[in-house]
Image (cartoon, rainbow, N blue to C red; front, side, top):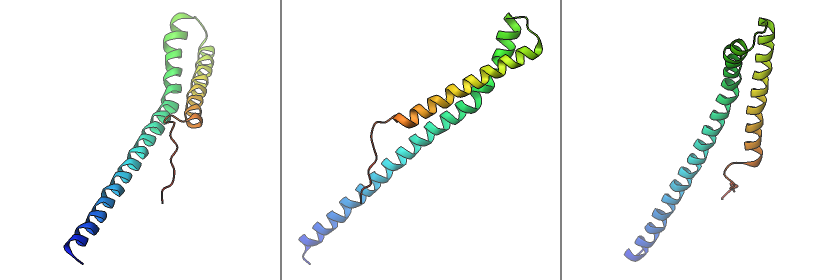
Length: 108
């Protein structure tokens, strides 16, 4: 091999390595973005109904309406279930319609 051929073959191998690294970083970025999205919706699904229950119970129903304790708990639970369904609906909407608009394709 001459020096010219060595430089050419080294240049090809050197150009392929950054491409793999850039592709890996792109995949890692997509994975991290997906993780953040799923974590957000998991926290929303867990904490929104709990917060809704206690806010309805303490602030709205006990504060403004004079109801029995049983009715306050029932209405608070119904509000928490509605909040849970809203959070689940948002997650399903996001999963079905997708947020990024780009489809990943396999590259061999």
